[in-house]
Length: 132
Image (cartoon, rainbow, N blue to C red; front, top):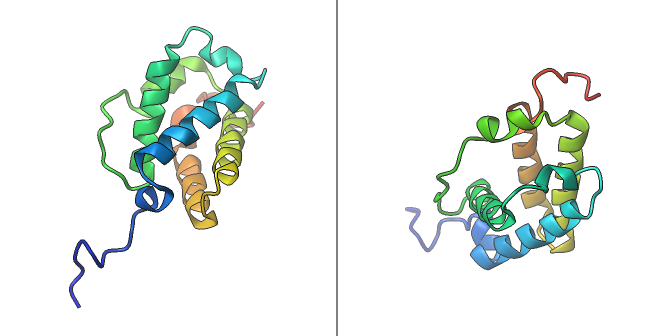
């Protein structure tokens, strides 16, 4: 049997409902993060409309949707912020809680968490191995 467009398994992106679902996740995620006193400061001087757009594009790619992301790579965007491991973990927890709240299937959440683990070294401050 040949795999065609019709028989190919749906991507995570398609399974959760595409662009509108990613947008809803990004909105809810940033509501949570901006309400977190430990994390809100990172976004004090950030264009949040642009930030939301970037995250939606990146999340779309992570979920197997179309790759239209043209922003900076993770390391150049995050290394200057000196993000400690503890804050990275907290952001991941907010993202996981957001996906759970929106009813995203567990296997998709597990895959997103795996990507978070893979890119952690690009985001956290390089001099923070202990997560201090």
